[in-house]
Length: 197
Image (cartoon, rainbow, N blue to C red; front, side, top):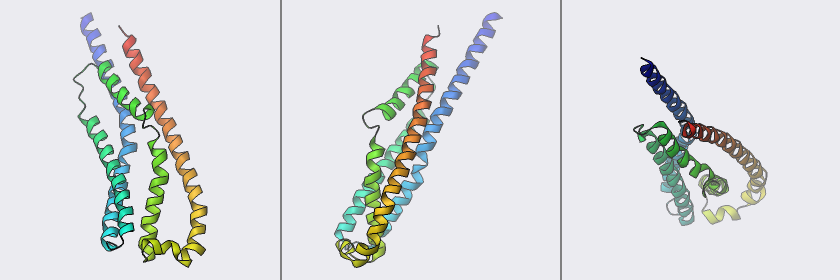
């Protein structure tokens, strides 16, 4: 009878730990999955705008570069989501949690941890060019020579760009701090499991 109670308690503890760990991992995924509609919307925009301006080679090249970055981001997000969804609990909780924590650590602390900070300015510039050139009804080079761009659009760019960068970087820093806090929670949980005999 005593061993039955101990076994039940151990199973309940494993279930509780697994549930809490999955909840934290799901929070990581939700933050990434929200980018899927953005990437798909970007792809649709790029296909439509490129098809309408196919004769402007520089515009097409800008959109292909922007689309390549968007496609890579979409692939990376879907791959991470799929990998998490198919990870099975066929290992002990301690081993499973250790594998998941190592994967998250590579993403948050690894060599590509700052990639978002580099991509924001690149994506902003390419997106700005794609939208601005499309609605100007001029060729890519002609847009920057036009009086409207020099007299009006340049001021909007000079004022709006720093505000957008500050807001974006502030949001990324806050998000990263939140994610690091959750990662530390998972590491602590894994450490406690490793110390249990």
